[in-house]
Length: 265
View: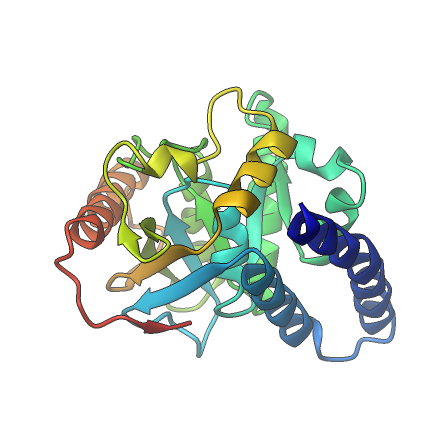
């Protein structure tokens, strides 16, 4: 109970400060956005006792489209703590009190998948982020899973690759990423335990985060695969299947303990 109150106090006091500082940096065209964002996520992971481990190496020397599976709201904290990135999120998040404003300042791309025009706008925003040098994380399933499997990828937003490739010399780099939750209090999670971390279906947010805080001490493993270059000659559906297969392989390999070279993020 006290831990939950402390985390809530931190969030509701430090988040407005974060918003103010990042807004000022943006207005004055000063650097520092990425440093503040990734360290903010690191602090939240520490408070929530989410221990982030990394397998492989994310591309850091250029803007990348990271294509990942999606398990929980905690994915954003874990992946965002590793390096500065912008996320693609459902449009409803933009209207959440405080969270929506914070997400905007983290350069989040909002998409309403039920409206074709909105999907086109989201693709344009993704392309702009990449052109401006900001890497983007796309949760390609379009929803979250129970943590035990990777759902089929949707190809609509991956179509952003074709447009980005047309405008970027040499195409756009894409890197498959898998996020897997593996340990609870240092004990390997079984098939029945991973849904305790997952936020999916009709689960309410507040009861879920309270339960996660009560459980605590969770290991999140971020596994980066081999990057590839895509341009206008790349077939969208073929690319989607290739990325889905790569992420599914990374996720299953981590859950089965095949990947051993794990280090802190």
